[in-house]
Image 1: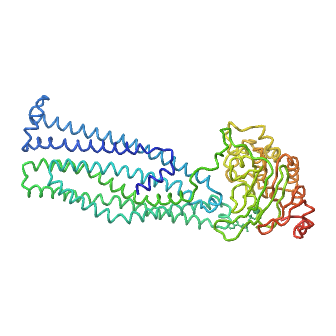
Image 2: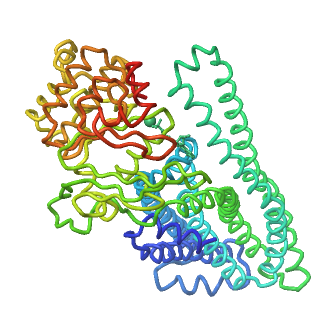
Image 3: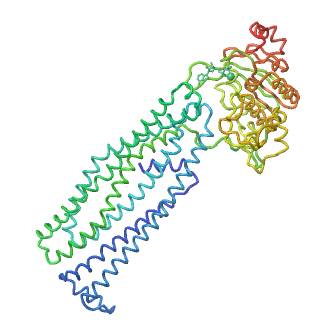
Amino acid sequence: MIRRLLRVHDQLLPSEGKAWLVWAVLGSLVVALLDMVGIAAMMPLMLVATRAPGHESVLDRLAPFGVHGVGAGIVVLAAAVGGVFLLKTVAAIMFRWWLLGRTSRLEGLAAANMLERYAEAPYVVHRTRSNAQMNRQLDFSMSQVFGGLLNGYLMITVDALTLILATVVLAWISPVGTVAAVVVLGGVLAVIQLVLRSHQRRIGRELSDVAAEQWNARIPVVEGFRDVRLTTSVPFFTQQFRETRARQARAVRKLSILSEAPRYLLEVAMVVGIGAIAAAIQLMGDTGQMIAILGVFTAAAGRMLPTLNRLGANLGEARAATVGLEETESTLAALPAAVTTHHSPQDDGSGPAPLQGDIELQGVGFRFPDSRDWTLRGVNLRIPEGSTVALVGSSGAGKSTVLDVLLGLFAPTEGRVMCGGQDIAARPADWHRSLGVVSQDVFLINSSLRRNVAFGVPEGEIDDERLARALHSAQLDDLVADLPEGAETVLGERGIRISGGQRQRIGIARALYREPKVLILDEATSALDNLTEKKLSMTLEELAGRLTIVMVAHRLSTVRSADTIVFMDQGEVTDVGTFEEVRRSNEHFAQLVALGRVG
Ligand SMILES: Nc1ncnc2c1ncn2[C@@H]1O[C@H](COP(=O)(O)OP(=O)(O)O)[C@@H](O)[C@H]1O
Ligand SMILES: [Mg+2]
């Protein structure tokens, strides 16, 4: 288990050293040693207090320090014991502070790295992922791995060392008493832990399931507000949420009681243990110091009981948390090992260098990993630099898939995509630098219009002139003028204040702000009214020649001005040519043109 934990640590935190773990173990040892000294110091105190055989020699040793007589001896020894315990307590708190700082920081770092890994994963992998799983992984499972397991194991180390060293001291004071104590307490502990094991694991599984189901119940309410509301399914989703919360509450209660219940049993065992120790000492005829020894054992028991309880609780939490480790292992197994798209091999520190030139799809075939059918077959296409190409064809023909392959989001199953003679797969960062992409669904962040257009650009680096140009080209000047705070107006995650057409224009402005070499539009103007669409077509015509434009569109007017029409059917390119050429060669296209809408 520890090896698996460390492997996950290395995978998620490759640049974090593990030397501190050695310090953690050494620190545990110091805390445990102080505890041991505290217990050992009890014996002389007890001997003097009970005037048991041997107390004279203790007093003799104190005499050189100017301490004379039983009364003074008790005061000095009691002060010494108190001092050692105080020191141990301060040391233990400091150690705990340091340890918690470490493990909490690592948990945060690991979660951030995990998020990065998710963001860098291949698009096909991303599409198979559920929101609920991702959210659970980033919060719940991360805290299980670093809080429940890593921190848990370190606390178990401290407590186990403390118990072992205390046992050594007690064995030195009274071997028979210690054997009796270990047999009684150890036996009770072993039985308790054996009984709890499988329960705690099962509860861990339940807690993990519930964590994901809760997300499944809350996501529709947030993301699908309209659908939830208008289908009067509010009770359905809230009830689902209520049930999962209730299940979570029951599981948390069970886990807590399983951690706490042993405490009461241990207290009983402790009382029985003291009796057993007394009986053992009596039987072995070692009765002279009986009262003193029993005093030390009782004091030690008082000290050790919280340690034993905490040990049990941490063992329980660690068992429940193994589910989180399993989840994390399987998440990591499904993600690529290293960050791939941040830096290109050519990156010399000056940032990505955009790819330029003709784009070529060479024998591209594409099949989804979980599918037996080919979504694209034998696509050969040459898109000269600066030309405008329109992909047309009925819905499901594969237009969006061709674009996703072209964008480098889907790696072709067969063939390759080239730009300026270079395989785009070899230089993903450079290729993405070349692109401006407008999808059908424009994603808006909960921020200002300005930041939605200069997407992902730090505030200080936003170029206002470029922003104004992009807004103007995307026909957004009127909107900016109408908004209460202009381009500074906050749009909201779901762009609540924004119409479908305005949203699309924001997407277009975002693509243009990047000053791309290649502009890709996938049904990017579908929600626009005719007039706005006409104006945007004019903008695109102005841009034509200066950059390469590849688009999927349905409106005849948009498509007509393209240099090349590519007709697609069932994943294959059937016709390529000018508008008139394709109209002549493809009957289906001719029919669509006659109807006024292509696709
Ligand atoms: N994950 C998937 N597994 C299998 N087939 C898929 C998957 N996603 C989409 N498809 C299929 O790919 C085909 C092409 O889709 P798409 O490129 O979106 O068409 P278009 O954009 O031309 O309407 C469709 O038939 C669709 O059902
Ligand atoms: Mg599509």
